Image (cartoon, rainbow, N blue to C red):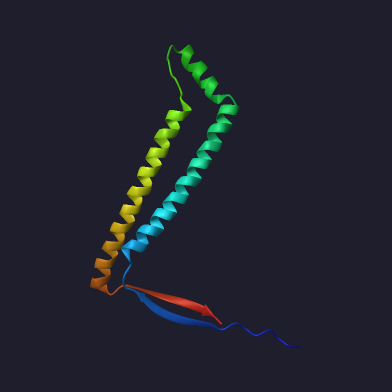
Length: 121
């Protein structure tokens, strides 16, 4: 009986001394833009489901019974949500770049972050 060779793990230690702010900005913009797109699609699906089930009409009818006048405009709601999402993409990307600069300053003081990587051969 021949046994399969056991993969050998090789450990490599490295130190992360610097994060490039430009790379952090590009990755952050890509990540938050994808997250923004996913949330917008999810909200669109949710809004379509709520509208098709008639929940919006039921809520408006209930509010009219309470003598309240409310108008729900889907286009205006969408504009506000898209603007808020775009603002959040920029805001959180800038926060990540600031944190990268902060990490670089702290890494100069303490020597960086030590990481052990396992390499399968």
